[in-house]
Length: 499
Image 1 (cartoon, rainbow, N blue to C red):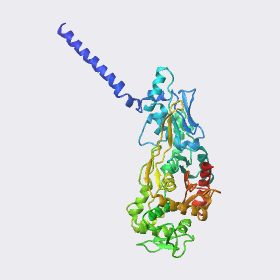
Image 2 (cartoon, rainbow, N blue to C red):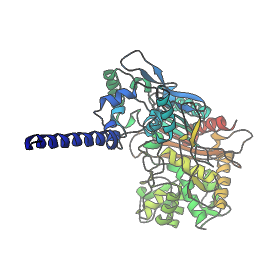
Image 3 (cartoon, rainbow, N blue to C red):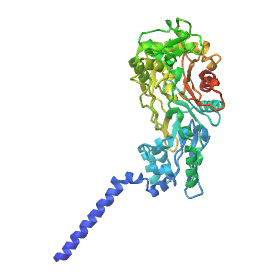
Image 4 (spheres, rainbow, N blue to C red):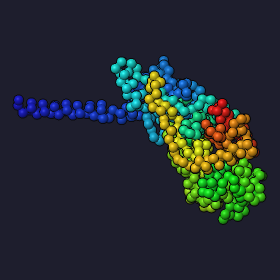
C-alpha cells in the first residue's frame, strides 16, 4: 500500500473511532442530561405519549392520565381539583420542559416526577418487563397520607369562613407519625385548566392566577406563608417555662391587667389583656392559658430570656427546613437577637415571630406526642403501576422538643382552655380536646390574623390541627378571633378523623 492510501486509511479509521466514541458518550454518559434538557422537545413529547402514574388518596385516584384525541396521546386530569390542587399541582408541557428546576414551585407532580413518569430506579424491573413484553410503559403511583374525610372537612369549614375571595389554610397531622392528614389552602384553583394541551390557553390561565400577587391561588399557604402566630405561640413560651423549671402547671404566675415591657415607657411598650380575666397580681398558670393573658406570657418570656425561648422554638422546628414533599417550604422564624422588650413581644407571638400553619400544627402535635416532634410527610407510599407497594415512608423524629412530663402539663392546661376558656368552640361531646386560640395583629390597617391549634382525644391523640385565617373579606375587624372562627373548623377536622 502506498503512502497516500495508507494516510487516508489511517485518517478514516481515526474519524470512525472518534464517531464511535462520540456516539457512545452521547448514548451512555450524556443520555440522562440530554433527556432532561428543556429544549429537547422529543423527550417531552414522549412523556405525553405514555400514561403517567396516578396520585392516590386512600385507594381513590385524584390525578390520572386519560387517553386524548389531540396532538398528545394522554391528558392529565384532576378530580376534586380545588380540594387537592395545592398538593398535586399540575403537569403540562411547560413544567415538563422545566424538568427538576430547583428554584421553581414544586407540587407532588414535580417532587415525585421520577415515580409518576416511570423513570425512578425503583421501577427498573417494571420498565424491563414492559420492554421485553413490548408493552406500553406506565408510570408508578404515589399514595398520599391524606385522610379524605378530614381534607373535605377542612376545605368546607375554611371556605365557609373566608369565602371564595378569602385566604387561609388548615393542616392536620397524625402526632405519632407526622403524617399529614389534611392540608388545605384557599384560595385554590382548577389544576385541569393548567394541564390543558392548548398551551396558549394554559399561559392565559397562569397569568390570571399569578396576577393576585401575595394572594395568588398558586401559593400553598399551609407551607409557603408565614405570619405572626399570635397567642398560639404561648404554648412554646409555656413549654420553655416548664422545661426551665421556672413554673409548673400548679404554680401561680404573674397576671394583672397591664404589663410595661422593660426599657419602654408609654403605650408603645404597654401590654394589656383586652379585658380578659387575668387578675390583678398572681393567678393560676392554667387560668393564664385559659384566658390567653398577654401580660403573663410577655413577662414570662422576659424572665426566660431570648436564648431559652429561641432554643425552645427551634426544638419545635422554627428556623429549620424539614418538609420536602412540596417545595419551597417557607421557614418559620423566631428571632435569636431580640432585646428584652422584643423578647416580651415574641413570647406572645408578635414582633418578628413568623410561622406557617404546618409549623403550628407541629407544635400541637409535638405536645400531643409526649414532647416528640415528628418530621411531617405527605407521600405515604410509592407503588408499581399495578398498585403493588414498592416503598413506604418510615416516620422520622425531628426532635424531642420537651419532656413527656412537660407535654402532660401543657396538655392538661390546653384541655382546660377548651373546657373553660377561649378555645371552647372546639369542644367535642364525649371527647377530651386540647386547644389554644390566637389572634395576631397584622401591623397594618387590615384585619388581624386568626389562629387555632388543637389535638384530640387528649389522652391518646390521633390528630392535631392548625387553622390560620389570613383574610376573611366578609367579616369586620371585630369579628376576627381565633376561637370563634378557627375552633369550629378544627372541631370538624378532628371529628372527621376520630369518628
